[in-house]
Image (tube, rainbow, N blue to C red; front, side, top):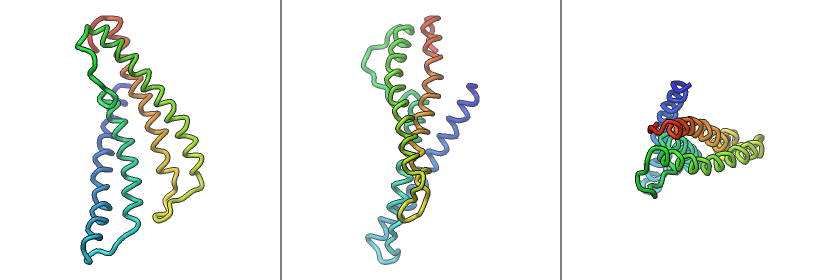
Length: 160
């Protein structure tokens, strides 16, 4: 299971790199079209940039949860492994609450946009709205992996 989760994490890393790289194209076209007459002003570039930006943020949050860096605040001094594991479990329970909200309302968001298309590119909006429940489900998956490691550290007294 760990190998599968690690492969999914690598896939998300690649997807994040791809969304950032692809995002550069419509944003650059939009900028150049404003300041030169060489490139016509495209309206669709703003919409595509917005959609890639949404996915970039959501995939970035998934990668951040996987790496343990997204909701990480160094508030406490370095404690013993059991105390650190307990603090991480408590912290991750709050993140889990947000994940469940993203799943529940994300599904409702996808249902809301089920028969909608975007104005200019005429893309099905569920493709865009699916980023929210997918982020929530991925957070739960990665939090589960971290939770098991922290429970192990809590039991054994050794860091995971």
